Length: 502
Image (tube, rainbow, N blue to C red; front, side, top):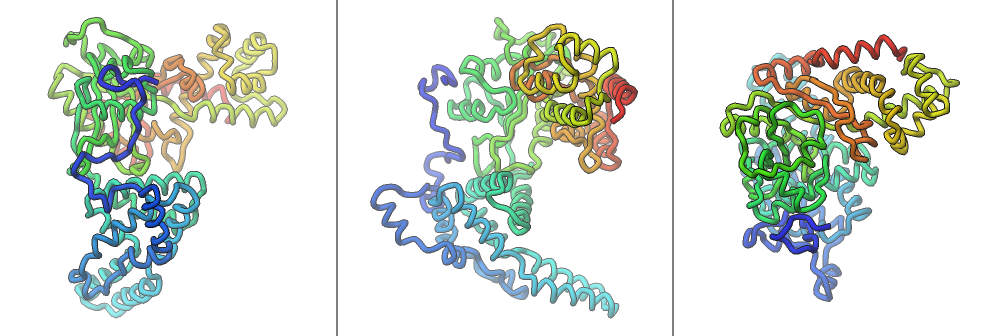
């Protein structure tokens, strides 16, 4: 598919994640595996996995010499990177990651020893200095050995890129069960926490994308769009043109590389339909500032799987709000127009559970059931389950009209009432509520694309940011799990509770 217009070849660019600017990569760290006869000879001479790990992972030095221990040789880290990248994605990498997590973790004997010394210091009522030193020793020996390898790689040129790639493999492996077990999960958490420190706001740069941005950046923005896929180069030009803004975070050690991308529409009101945003064309390039009173965050996409769970989205929205306030101080309304992934799957699950219990109905009123059955010619729950599975229901205007109210109240309950550990079950809702937004408005037929119909029955939701209240709303949600919602949402929730016996 042609992507980005006259600045690029019609042939799709080869996607190369983490491609470094010329002159900044050391072959020993960042280059991929060698090919051909020379590469084969090198592979034959390469160390085995066990030997490679033994000499690449630095031992934890004794507590007394931790400040004086020399850093591992750079060649060891470079050798590990080359070896890992030389393995094909799949079982071999999974084996290496599993061995690294299992065999180079915490020294449990030392942990037990110094845990006992901390308890002994407390029981003997020793002075605070002695107790604190015992606790510091314990804390030191709680560090897994592989953490030293990650720290060493993070200091190498190109090493930070590699660690993000490696964690991407970990995340994928855990999701597919290619790697599993408590040791691997623990290593994934350790690496995530380290990346969270290295990718904190002080190291991030906010960059705006325009049609004049480098072609490579535009291509990466297009490729990374996970919410509303870019159709062609004209579509991409529209999304970075007038009445639109596109921003991304890059890291100071990885300049120009998009890590997370935010698309914004500049409108005169809070949008209720994504079609108006991704398909609308303004014939006049010059923006009329009188028409810009609202900023709509309609897509946010993480470009690197390895940064999953690292807090980037919250900071990006906050930085973009400040940027827009400086550029366009007349903007008063800040809101998202967000998808509702998982709603259709949740609803089909409810219908399935009711079908198994002899057509029990606890989702629709009697009059709604009668209307649905008259239109579909079959039992309500079983027929709807089939129609939702293949998106056929949207072909009937009558059915779309009849399902409007019941689906709206079901969606309101899904967003507001369905919980995971006390917080919103829906991940997008949880993200914006943690940021301090208000669950403001559910919009019917807001995304009529096949993806929108399939994921959320065409509905989308606005999470509105009242800037003066975001801090208190966030604290209330995180502290007491209270969801701040508008009258529209609460009214739909109330209707659900009155009409449902769930």
